[in-house]
Amino acid sequence: MRVVMVGAGYVGLVSGACFADFGHSVICVDNDPAKIERLLNGIMPIYEPGLEELVLTNVKAGRLSFDTKLDEALSQAECVFIAVGTPSRRGDGHADLSYVYSAAREIAKSLRNFAVIVTKSTVPVGTGDEVERIIRETRPDADFVVASNPEFLREGAAITDFKRPDRIVIGVEDERGAKVLTELYRPLYLNSAPILITSRRTAELTKYAGNAFLATKITFINEIADLCEEVGANVQEVAKGIGLDHRIGSKFLHAGPGYGGSCFPKDTLALMKTAQDYGTPVRIVETVVAVNEQRKRAMGRKVIAACGGSVRGKSIGILGLTFKPNTDDMRDAPSIAIIASLQDGGGRVRAFDPEGTEQAKGLLSDVEYVEDAYACAEGMDALVLVTEWDVFRALDLGRLKKLMVGDVLVDLRNVYPPTEVLRHGFRYTSVGRL
Ligand code: UDX
Image 1 (cartoon, rainbow, N blue to C red):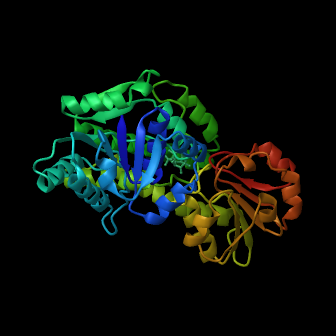
Image 2: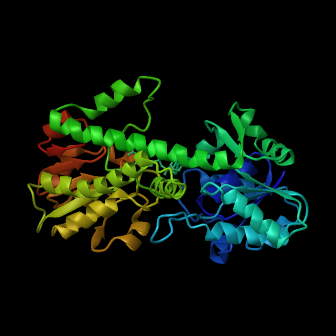
Image 3: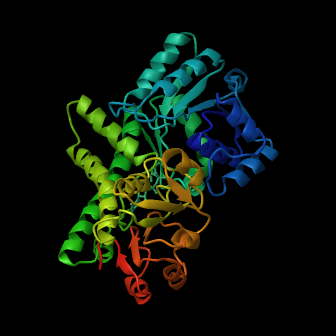
């Protein structure tokens, strides 16, 4: 099957490479010539485990290529994915659909044969209708169907998530469209992934509802963690105790500094706005958004409290900057708010992140970057683990302690066993326990 992926960003590139790996012929088109040039030279625009190898293998096999021009790519495509960004619109939190609509216009101009146009970007309910209207208006003669096929990829595990999904959701109300898309995903559902064919609007909403539910789960356990600290309970054990109930499930119950990243913050906000527009506010999600925002700042205060109530003139080492491990993504990372509050309080910040330093440099000021965790601890009054990269799990705590001038260790991901940390003479603060 011939597939065109419009947008060679995170979602487009991962999905394009995975479709190619299943044997489809894929062209990823992006209007950023520098990005396409780099991809043609085998340089990935993002860090994602396994992606480079997957891309190079499929390029070599002739199944995956890159282009800046849509026209030629589209000439034979049966399936065209729109995988461009839908950031939060400045000012009102609605998803900014200008890239989606301009992609729709471009696609319309170049359509030749029957094609299924699929929105893969996360788009508010009703966007498919608008994409269809734009294409119809631009090209009244074109033979096409518009479908919705949201992605559920986690950064850092995107290739596995694509290849072994819990489910595939396809919103399409036309038989020809459904046939093309089920054929496209055949390699996956033969691997027993359930394929759910629904209306376009249902598919669009499913994506937002899924992300909002997960964000709610995290926020719920974060609030329970705060309560645990007050009443002397252990949030990890509470999470285990409730998670073993199959109706609840054990995943996404890790208390921490609040969720960040490119999806949850933007999608919860967009769902909230859509619901308000329709006069049916999702009040739980509104609360989740507010609580999570407050939490990121509260984590800064937690570090300050661990340092005895003030960080003025103190040096603090930050382990991990990205919103989660195995990514270089700094979007809405809790580290940004935490570092800002430490700096506002007069603290000096040094940081180490295995992949996120370049992106961090564009977002944070007055931070000294070092090359490993031990250099990050040297001469510090306090050390704060913000992102649970694997390299931080087995650190030599005795060595860290000796390198520091102070003894404060704040573990915002509950990575270390408290007894072990205390044995090395740290004053230890974690989340929802001890
Ligand atoms: C998420 C969804 O999981 C994915 O299905 C969707 O397509 C895109 O958004 P991603 O943003 O890559 O994926 O990250 P995810 O692993 O879901 O984590 C999101 C945030 O929640 C991170 O900041 C993470 O640290 C936090 N988190 C997650 C917790 O604090 N506790 C948890 O138990 C799980």
